[in-house]
Length: 122
Image: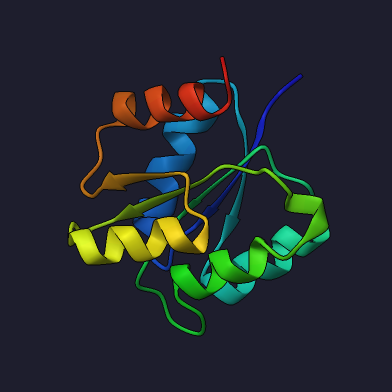
């Protein structure tokens, strides 16, 4: 079964880079343009993994994760932050909100694929 991954980032070029890396490895990718869009897509379908930016318009990544963690459909879904932020305080806040992992931009596609394989148990 193909794993489905939701990517949430306000940068179109970054969404494209993530999609190319993940779909090239056989994952089904759904894109969201900001946290609110990501939350709405997470309400509508079950994902095996969510990759989210932290700083986005309309709803930031932390707010989105807190809301997604309340959704029965996404229970246990790993959520990985992909962000330029490396501040330890923000990392702790992200963990408290329910983030599974952290990847700092700019990312290396192989690194993204290793994390995906790890959190998806493949």
